[in-house]
Amino acid sequence: DCLPILIAGQRAVAAVHSGWRSAARNIAGKAIAYLVEVAGERPADLTVWAGPCIGACCLEMGEEVPQEFISRDPMAAGFFSRGRKWHLDLRGLVTMQVLRAGVSSQNLHHINDCTKCQSDKYFSIVVSGDVREVSFPGLSESNEQKARMIGFNNIRIPETEFMIKLGVNIDHVATIRQ
Image (cartoon, rainbow, N blue to C red):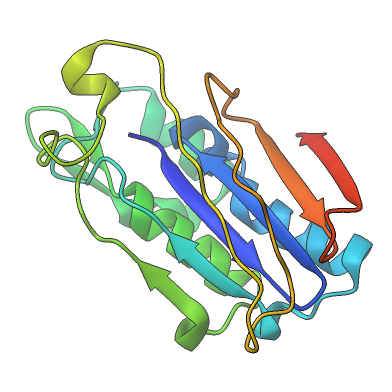
């Protein structure tokens, strides 16, 4: 139900696992900053793909959660709505963070499906109660994109962790913790 994000530049690729806790800490923005600092990428040249995740329709939060976000970033208030419980638009919040980090809106692509609403199509921890989750993001070499990333599985990767794979030949792997 967390938001899988693949960020690709000319020299580097990042696979980011963004749950609500890591979104509160701007993990996607930090991944972009890392690609800029370490790999020399320009944010405007990065392309970002965001996969399916739990939607605002289904992501219910406790009473204390909105304040945790807002204390870190007042702009986060716009991504919460109140029904019976607080709901968070995780995709919307991460989109704002990515755009604020300098990625062009033309280079941002989404699969806008809710994993809970479409649990027949996507795995949903909320629906299944099973904490095992596996995803294999990948980018193959092409004329447009001179970076390649082999798939990785993210079985229970902590929400504050992401992997960076640098180079066409995957010559460097770094795990970053916030």
